[in-house]
Amino acid sequence: MSHKKEIVTAVGTLAIAVGIGFVMQSSDSAQQRYGEGARPQVAIQGMIASPGAADSFDSDVMLEVQEIELTSATDVAAVPVPDAEGGVERASVPEPADMPDTDQSPEILAEACEMTAVAKAVPGAMVSLMLDAPCAQNERLTVHHNGLIFTHTTNSDGALSIMVPALSEEAVFIMAFSNGDGAVAQISVSDLADYERVALQWRGNAGFQLHAREFGADYGDAGHVWAGTEPDVAGLQTGNTGYLMRLGDADLPEPLVAEVYTFASGMAAASGTIDLSVEAEVTMDNCGLEIEAQSLEKMADGGIKSRDVTLAVPSCDAVGTFLVLNNLVADLKVASN
Image 1 (cartoon, rainbow, N blue to C red):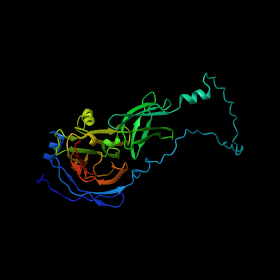
Image 2: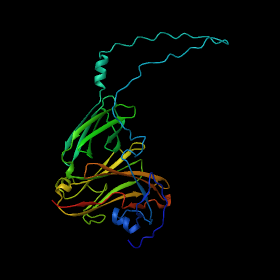
Image 3: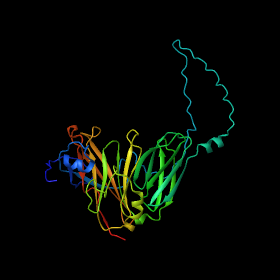
Image 4: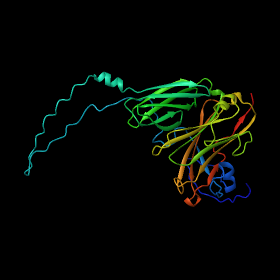
């Protein structure tokens, strides 16, 4: 890639800054990575990122939810009625009509609106997560799990069924609606230690992508895993290849979206390095703006390492180019088993 021209771009930080290298890919490189339909590219150099706690990503949505309670208004303040003056006369209001009788008692109605969540561990250190919220049809909600957050929508029955990669053995999932209602599910994920897992999350149409190039694979090769490749579930379970899953409903306004890459290191068929990079395409939605993301890496001791990044995207003249951050997340070292 010696033909690329490099210039410096200034960016901001969310906390204490450390250097992270990135380049903007040339036209030939973009076609190799993303196909012949890729737009022309230019080159760029420079990036700043910062370490941060897992709960630092967008504080307005990363709430420390300890309990979820269903609440309702119980007291309504009386509205004062002014005395008649200045020729203004009070008008009497008719008594409210009696409400029709209902066959359902308040207790039955409350049971019908109860929200429940169920989590089930499945192979691949994955969790099948199901929510039943009959009084919240077609409603937006936020899923929280060990620093990972993304938004989804219930269906016309008030139900949601999704698969989520676990980030902790004792996995807790909180599903919260904007009015404070919600439900919690917990499950033990006994096989999590056999898997390496890295996540990237962001808000809106920021254009971020998580890429994995396994054991020397180049862009476009069989070992290049990203959102544009067909998921290989069987390869994940046998340790032959990794698996990337995108979480969140991108069609929502200002969605919270995440990508999670998983590799079965506990049953790996080969030894070597998996090169990980974060990329951001310059689009009409993000050109000329500052975009933010957070990475989450599952550590050997079960903890989560997070890093926050703010990136200044070039002007709209650069639409179609790709910024490549090579050091935001650590490469994975894998030994065969």
